[in-house]
Amino acid sequence: MAPAETRRLFFALRPSAALQDELVRRTRKLVRGGGGRPVGPEKLHLTLAFLGSLDEAAQACVEAAADGMHGEPFRLVFDTLGHFPRPRVIWAGASVIPPALSALVQELTRALLPCGYRPESRPFKAHVTLMRKVGHGPQATALDPLVWDVRDFALVESVTLPEGAQYRVLRRWPLHGAGEDEPRTE
Image 1 (cartoon, rainbow, N blue to C red):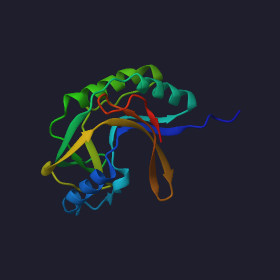
Image 2: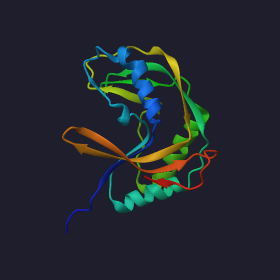
Image 3: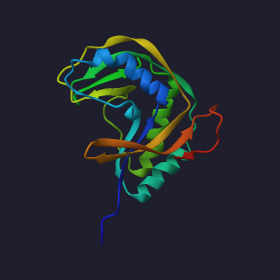
């Protein structure tokens, strides 16, 4: 019997193309000198829950869990640039986590547990990775605030190709007040 086909999946917030480009434009000079590899604007995201490789049944479980979510839209302000020595990344993040984001992460974590999800042991840190495999990076540095009005979250597939990982949004779920009642399939 052949092993079940799996997909490498995660839940994330995905900024608009305009916000992705603006984030890269504003931080380009600040991340130079880290000796790493910049993340392309189309790959920028904020991970809510990394799921790993899931088969079709597990994917259906996590999608059903997301179907039952009740989050509110919120404003996220990126105002900090920082460095995680391990896993060697430079990131942009928010110094203040909106309560609606914390609630979304907590509710998503609870909803995913029956699907076999194992949450990170580290506390949640709202950030977007800008550069990977850096030799060194800046200490936490203030950024001119960049505002992101978050209206939905997404299930994203990571596909590893010879040229690197590619991300594909599989579905989106609106946060209440976003003007939509049903999840979308991309």
